Amino acid sequence: MTAALRPVAGEPREVWELVAAWVHDGGDPIVVRTSGSTGEPKDVILSHAAMTASARASLDRLGGPGGWLLSMPVTAVGGLQVLVRSALAGLEPVFVAEHPSLADAIAAIPGERRYASLVPTQVHRLVESGSAGVLAELDALLIGGAAVPPGLLAALEGVPVVRTYGMSETSGGCVYDGVPLEGVRLRVDDAGQVLIAGPVLFDGYADPVATAGVLRDGWFATADLGEIGADGRLAVTGRSDDVVISGGVNIALPAVTRALRELEAVRDAVALGVDDPEWGSRVVACVVPADAVCLDGLRLDELRDAVEESGLPRTWAPREVVLLDTLPLLPGGKIDRQALRGAVR
Image (cartoon, rainbow, N blue to C red; front, top):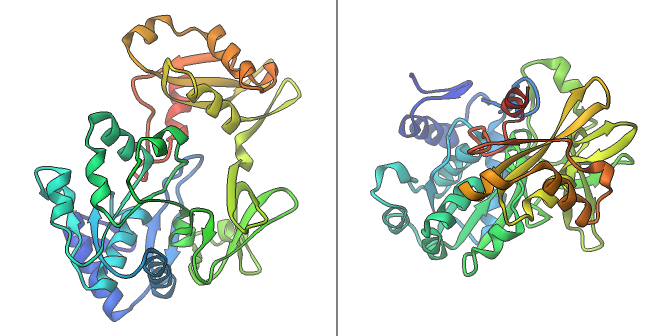
């Protein structure tokens, strides 16, 4: 595949060369194709000013330029920003795939400071394999792309974790540990939706109709629900499309997901709303069991009881369970909900 920036495509090293030149010389906006986790993918137009503003603000927050480990796809904004930050620092990133182990890759990171950016699934696999301890050698480990389970954070004791929140439309992570980067502004509208403004925003989608629906007087409407505390920190509580109506009852799917993940017999889970002729929507528990024994013994009534025992209404409990070996993921680490719906049906 020939490397390109509109949209971003190609092998990591080839894309790195294009990005390094683009960061240094400027040029037309690049185009990143979104993952389309809940709908059709979109082509996001990102200017040189927005991408470099994001990268500089990130490096300032982290303590200064340094070397980066690249372990995410460069076609998604998370991996792409690793390249942009590396170019600003004048240091070639370390391509983890070119080293025999993660420890070797981290040891090869150049510069006085060493950074990495991972999605929760990557971190989970390192914890499961017993390899996560080497992450403590980093000056900062950015984890973003999806919500970070509390249990995963607890397993990273000694690792300098920074939880990031952002998306392609904000040039990547723009809120670190709940605090917006320099120049980024946040607010929550009357419906509880998080809105973002600042120099990191995209120019729009290739489809101007789609752009008009989310850019409002310089603010980007994220479709995420959240709260801003008295200390100014953002807490993301879910998505506006993560609330379904089943039998006339509004059900917040993220809350059901959290309850399912608390079960010892569950390695991972996500609550999904699907169309139902009787209920309008029904909640389906898509579950990865902790082991083969659990696979045989995990029953729907146990999951329903667990949801109720967590303090949620019984009416929120799933009406169906689908057992999976793994949850399908998009390249950026988010749950592929379209694929899940295919598995349910």
